[in-house]
Image 1 (cartoon, rainbow, N blue to C red):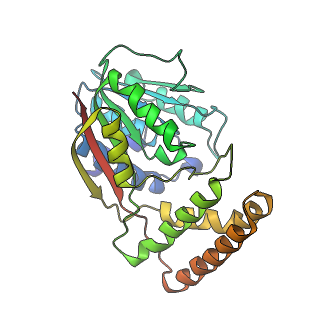
Image 2: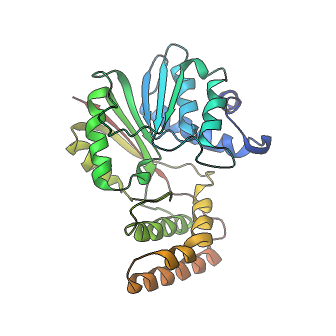
Image 3: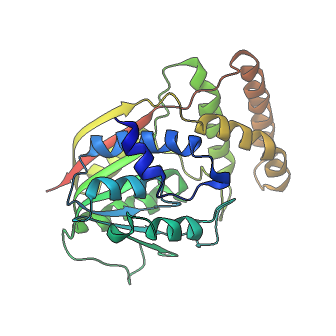
Amino acid sequence: MTDNRLDDIVACMAIHDGDGSIQRIQTEHRLKLAEYWGITKGSRVLEIGCGQGDTTAVLAYLAGESGLVKGIDVASPDYGGPITLGQAADHLKKSKLGKQVQIHFEVDILSPEVDFADKEFDFIVLSHCSWYFKSAQQFAETLKKCRKWGKQLAFAEWDARITRMEQYPHLLAILLQAQYECFKENSLSNVRTLFTADDVRQLAEAAGWRVTRENSLASEKLQDGGWEVAGFLHGYYEELDSSVMPDKLKSLIASEAYLLKEALKHTPHVKSMSTFALVAKNE
């Protein structure tokens, strides 16, 4: 992996305050994923849950001008900050990668109006977006509907099977969010439904995909674990006050939050969990 590739991709992305150091780390991780999936020049890709385009930019770079990356997301273009999804997408489309990129927001993949031709795409990509789904049923229906559109499924999400104690705070922050999200009808949380590697494998196969390879990929420099922990500790009091969850569960979450704080005393440098990556074929 060369610095030139990272420089080329990051230069096409909207960067807050002009400091690309964080984005370089995020982009390096997504290059690792896209290469594992097998994205190459000329690939036609449908990316579901494209968000701010962290993965989109990498896919477009590898697909080249002879390829196409169509990103769709259910969120509004005004969502996010300090750079909104719409601002990030506009910046990417105006860059040298813009020729091979299409991005559309406020698209519900399960709407009857959303459809594509059979095997129109070489890859259907879902990258670090599965935990945003409001239920396992919604995720399963998405995997089933999109199968006819693509030849291969390329999936990535945090791997809850931690292998190091430095990853424990990240895992605990995720589990805590997943508990109180069970009682919400609507949410803007990063974790609305937690899927393990085994969950994803089973749901993909039930939808008709045949899993051909999978792996747990570590990216040691990623900052997401620390961000997730800080975000949970900043907002969980408000979540407990506003939630309709039983009092006994509120007490349990408060106790687990205490354990998270204690763990941080012994793990000052939180490591992000590894990423579960999967490739499956439509056969």
